[in-house]
Image (cartoon, rainbow, N blue to C red; front, side, top):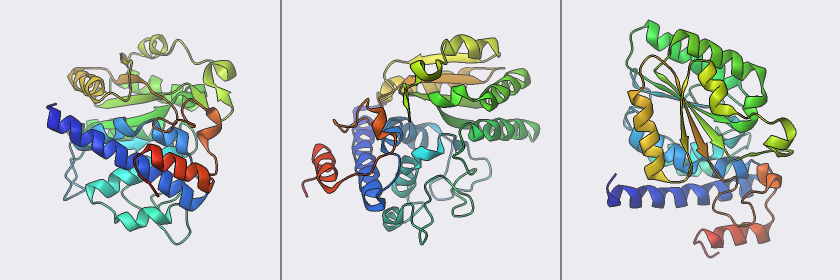
Length: 276
């Protein structure tokens, strides 16, 4: 990527973080920490990596994106708005009954979501099914699924991983948003999922680690690597920071989901360059 592309993505990342804070403050609910941790991953996928058409989001041969960690959907909705797929005014009705953007992606409300997700690990199985179906139909499309580290504590994840490896689904990439925290605290203290890469390789996957999951260059190299893998699905382990970009949220499990007071809302927006 050239400097102009990087600058554009960084500006978009700042906007997405502002949207996340604005949406969850207006709703007085939502999941800020996990939404803030995958901003760069999401932007790179939708603007640089995936084969999609901005003018036709339902293009048949598009790449598919599954947000398995569905609670972090504020990021996805903001990205949709930047793509022009939804009106930005719809963001301000986040989690409201008169809006289409629910607290977890719902195909009942918006067909832009490739599948409804929210229950941990649900998206992993759907993504595997999509990749298998695309293979059977001879389609060139790829499937990308964003998963959380807490989902590695779910049995359904490993059933999906085993199936994908045995089927050789090289059109499937899982991205692990590895921020190390879940709603109750430290993932490794609650139910340690490590060694992660070794487990996936045992299930016939290839793995790649990104030490800074907020660095666009490192992430782009990882996605380029994934496209070059043949005969096996791929796992990208991206080390991220829960609550990235907001000082009082960073690396705090309490901000998995918490109500923003007016004072904290103003503080967060000021850190993002908005003076209210």
